Length: 381
Figure 1 (cartoon, rainbow, N blue to C red):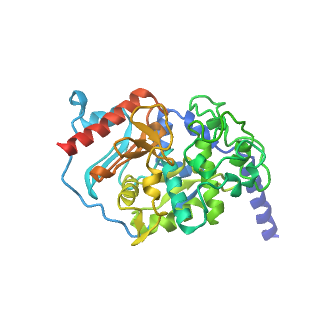
Figure 2: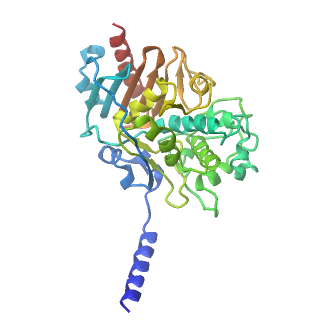
Figure 3: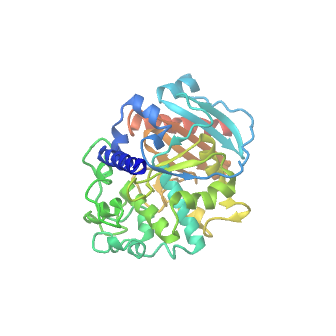
């Protein structure tokens, strides 16, 4: 009798949980400032996630201190306060030249990266190519996601997804609650089909594949699903196996997922420590070698981080989910102020974690670029 009663109670609790509305993954776009600063360090308390297991920490020893000279004699503390910065790290030649924290963050804080995760997902494509799980970048996307065969993605290649040149219509307006980026996790679910795939399959064509670049977070989510299907592993498990453990990240990371179908958000959703973001940049500077073995397909790094698409900005372009610069540097950039900047010519990694008051605007972006320029100028002096 007691056993039956506990079963009934358990069922009631489960039903109550199912009846409780869960947070929409895109609600993050519309949080207020206190919500952002509290939640960006604890995304797992708001959304389902998978753990990326770490290994034995790759050392990041201290180097000669660097204090960049900011415009108008602005102090570093003033810059961090004005732009709600949670962490700054500069690593050169594998040594930490600058490390600062704000907003109550510490070296153990896992901060969300938003679209910096796109560059993580791209890097896993390079690993899957080396493994042979992905045959070719010129494969049709439908080879891996056949549910897209009837729509605008039927003739799109993996390479065109990576460069965001699919030609499929998309609206990435972060302040419009009806935009594609705000609605891509909404709609009816089909059994066995990730909700994101159902949404993307219904989108119309706007341009011919390969004709024009349009930034689309939903397409990186598709890349993540493609990697998962090709490898038979979650993005978190594959990242742990290929990079996080063998290279030696110091702490577990998190990768957000759909709480029903389990699909990780390839275009956003990684939370990691400031030091481990820097280690990922160092992994790339080290040639994509982890545990003494090459992780990525031959030539992948050079190809992924060069300009493949014109974004209409002088001196910049878009590679395989990396923003590229004509000077050879490349970056993963996320809304609300996140940055992973890598400059091979200077053996340099710069990381910024933040909670900007807006997803993105010119003023905030210019200030971040000015910080990067001040770091580079300080190194070159």
